[in-house]
Image (cartoon, rainbow, N blue to C red; front, top):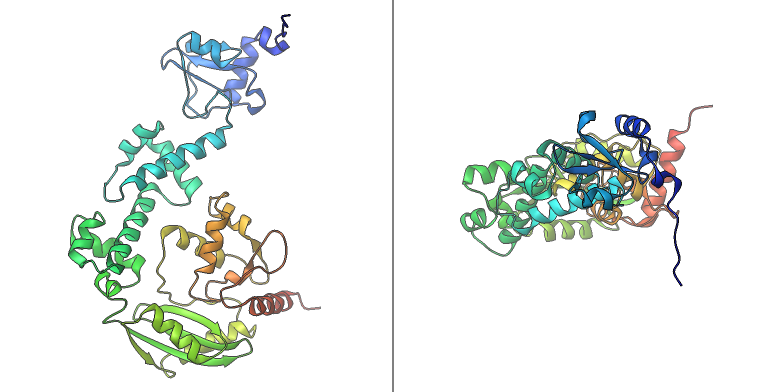
Length: 365
C-alpha cells in the first residue's frame, strides 16, 4: 500500500514578489519555506543569509534545497540552507578553523589561506572568529605558539631550540610576542624563575593569612590561606628557581590596598599585574574585572560575555587558575544552579567576601 504525502501549502507555489521582499529584509521567519539561488555564483541560500544582496535578475526561488541542487546550484557555506541554524553552522565553521590552526602551531597560516580552507571571506572569517572565540585568529594562533613554547621550556629544551620548535622565526619575534604572555623572558621562564627576583610580603587579615608578591613588572600573586608558611611554600613551588625576598617595607602599600579590599574599604583594586596566561584566560579575567562590586555573574554569563557561550567549563578553569585574588575578583563568579561554588582560596572565604560586598554595596538609608 502506498501512502502519498501532500506538499505543504507554501511548497506548492511561491510568490516571487513576497519571496524577494523576504530576501531583501533577511527575514528569518521565512527560513525553511524556500531558498533562493543566484545565477552568477551558482550558490543557493536561505532568506536570512547575511551575504551581499544579489541583483533581482540573477535570483531564482525554489521550495526546497533539493530542487536548487537538481538545477545545478550548491549550498551556501555561510548560511547552510540545508537545515542547520546559521549560528550553529557558523560555530562549526569556526571550530574547523580552530582545528586547522591547532594542527601545527608552528605553521603560519594567513587569514586569506585560512578563509579559503573554511569557505568564508577573510573579512567574515575574522569577524565571526572573533565573536565566537573571543580573540582574533592571529591572537589564537599566537596563544597556541606560546603554549607550545612553554611546554618545550618546561621540558628542558634550550631557548634556541624551543624558539624554532614553537614556530618563531627569530629571537626578536620570540621575545616580543611571548614575553608579555609568559610574564618574564623565555629564558627565565624555562629556568622556572631563575634569575628573577620576586619580592613578597605577608599579613594577617579577617580571612586568614595574605601573601602579595611582585616581580619587577607587577603583582604576580595575591593568595589567601591558613598560614604564611603555606603561602610561601606555594609561591616557591611555582617559581622554584627564582630568588625570593620577603620585603614588608617595599610592598606595604600593595598589602594595604589588598587588605582594604578584604575589609570593604576599597571597591576596586587597580594593581599593576604580571600574570601568565593564554589569550582566552586573559579575556576571561578581563571580563571578571568588569563585574561591578556587590554583583555576581554565573559561569555561563561570563562565557557569553567573552563570546564563548559553550565554553562554560573553560571559563571555570580560568577562574580556578587565577593567581591574584581580589585583583581579579573571581569570587564574584558563581554556578547557575545556586550556591557560591568552588574557590581557589576556599569556599568559606568566598562566602564571606560575597556577603561583605553585598552589604557594602547597599544604598545608605
